[in-house]
Image (tube, rainbow, N blue to C red):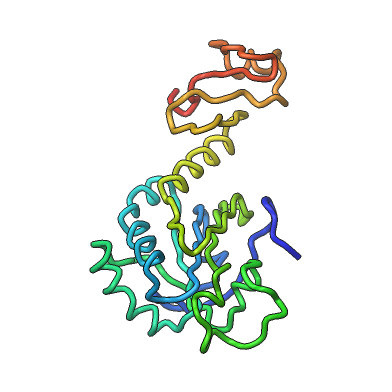
Length: 221
């Protein structure tokens, strides 16, 4: 069964570069970004892992924990960390899961469940679908997932932008328009009728269309 937005993210126990974890327990009351890699010491993934470390303070400000996943042993992944530091100027301090039995990759629909065996002998091409980002809320629900081709590096500034939107819209009855960034105007949800909106937003709104009403970012108040 495929994972969908608002499904509960599967819980699991795993060995990581920072010791054993139980995923839901590790998330706790935070948001989480789980992002996977088809093989250690691959070029695009090396730049990505370094960038996530560079952005660690930005994730922390948003109460977001980051965790990587690779289909390699802890020793293999640990041997990669100095390379990442050389490449990106930052050595990952967040945990990276060792999914050597491919169990988590299958659990999260990144590989066919019918696939047999372990990661031993498999190449990055064999695991090319293990290039997914999952954003998971404190309620342990899947909020977003994106799968990238191996030749396209992920944009983690966009991941931060999406988190800003989801955190705002989880606490206010609004949606964010195209290319929105934190602090810009937002849209009153269509489910909020005008009479209710007058109480929620007493300063009024700008009506573009009856179904498109804009207000300033309410988190700035």
